[in-house]
Amino acid sequence: MTRRLAAVVVSLLLVTATAAQAQAPMRVRGTITAVDGNGDGVGATTRPGPGGALTALEVHVFPPNMPVPNEGHRPWDLEPAR
Image (tube, rainbow, N blue to C red; front, side, top):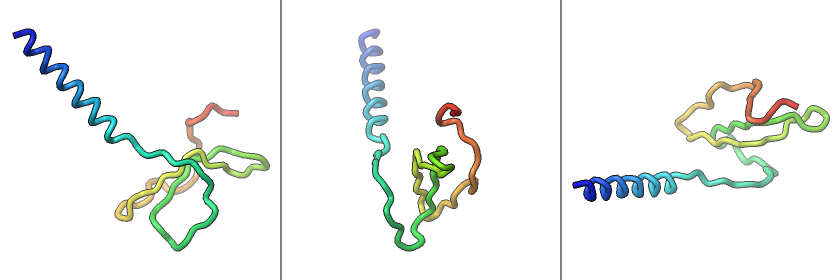
């Protein structure tokens, strides 16, 4: 009975690990050089750069049926304060 229970637990762990890997987000690095049309909702996580310009750390693209949540700019704790 304990072998059967151990086999079930191991199987569940393998299925859970496989499902977690299948849902990993795709990460893309690059520079936005142009925007064509209105497109989908886009948000950005930024940090202050040289001369007060904001530099994006993350860019979020929202599905067309989802409004951009909490529009505006506010402090964020993604990085330690400089």
